[in-house]
Every structure is written in C-alpha cells, then in structure tokens.
Length: 286
Image (cartoon, rainbow, N blue to C red; front, side, top):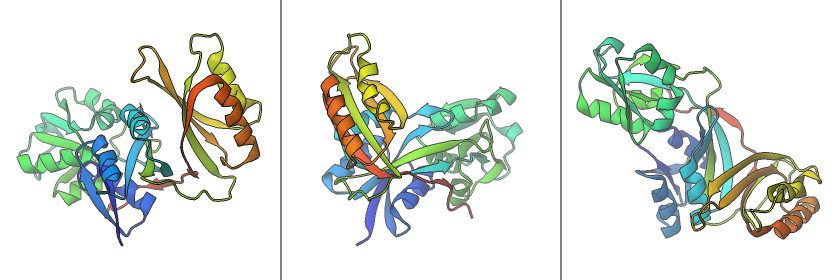
C-alpha cells in the first residue's frame, strides 16, 4: 500500500522534495497548512509519516518543530540535508522593476535579505509557505506581486522566473529535514547512526549542571553534533535540551553515557536513531 506522507505547504514546496528523499518516490503527498497538522495526521493515522524542516544552515533553527517534537514525541526515523536554491518568480510580463511586493515564508525572506537591500522599493511580505506564495502570485495575476520559491514551484504554477539563486550566499544554503512516523524503526547495526534525545536538568540552578550532564558523553568520546535549548512549556525559566550525537543506542558506551546522564536529569527521552542523512539537491526542477 502506498504511504501517505504529510508536509507543510503547497505542492512544489521544498518539503515535498524532502518527503520523496526520506520516504521514497512511491508515496502520496499530503500538503498541510501548519506543522502541527502533520503531527496530528500521523497521530490519527491520516498520514503514515511526515517530513519536517528542523534547521537551515544560514537562518538557523525552526523552533516550532523542536517544540512539536517534544509535545508529540513521534519518533525521528531519518534525515536529509537538502540544498535550497530560491528563485524570484512572477506572472508573465512582470519584471523586477514592476514589482511592489514579494512574498514568501519568513525563513526564505531572511535567506534572501540581500535582494531586498538591493531593491528597497520592494516590500517583503510574509506568507505561510514558499510554494504557497507562488500559488498566490498566480491567483492574483498581476505584475506587481512576486514570490520566492523553487523553480519547480514556479513552473508548477505557470510563473516566469525573474532571477535564480536569490539566496544571500550561493551554494551553502541547506535545510535539514527529519522523517517522523508513529512507530520507531529497527536500528541498523552501523556506526554511522545519529541519535537525538531531549532532557530536563534536575538541578538547573546548580553551577555546572549542564557541564556534568554533557560530560557523560565527552568522557566517552561521543561526538555531539548539536545542542539546542527551548523554553520548558510548564516551567518559567526552565529549559528542555535537545542533543544530537553520533552513536548507536545499542552500543555499550552509549548505554553507559545515558545511565550517567540520568543522574543529572529529571527525564531523558529518546526521540530517534537513524542513519546519518546525505546532502541532496532539490528534485523536480524540470
């Protein structure tokens, strides 16, 4: 049976391409208006899985998805690092000089801030999605509105591409996407495994409490690839820490590290273990 995979945005979104890398070509894609709808669809069985962006190499973390991972606890089962190449698109006959507004997702607008510095007369307008901005521009049908999206989205909605590679720094704009689903997957017997956990410190007002917690990994030479903190939803000025590391949770040294970590935390939760993701280019640009 064909899997149904949810993503935030409209058809042609970068997340659609990520979904196909993460779950394969033979899927039915389910566009959603919000990130939380992805998690809800997985929880109810409407979707078999979802593709969520978690961080961008130039604009930083997508904090909403960190918070939703903690809320819903759907296992992370894969990742892909997708090279993002933005284009400026508009209706036929439009030029950069005729544009008064350019709309896109806040992350895309931030990644293309140099364009707006070059053309200060153009107003940047926040829209919920990159591909959705292309769809909206096509609906408006004028020469004064433009969007920032992928070339695939521009072609999908019949728009002209006025400029490619609109991102501030060419060739280094990547977004990391996670694959999530209702049930965890079997972990391969491999050293090339990434593990993601979250935890709350037991004594967060005690000096060096975080140092001692992550020291459980340092003393065993376990490579931490990312640490992120987010406000605790039920504890003012308390924080939830997310840690990504390289290691198989079945390995003896990681089991020992988790045992030591638990001495310094109120709880530790294993969000997922999966093969380290590859870097890929955007699909469906033709």
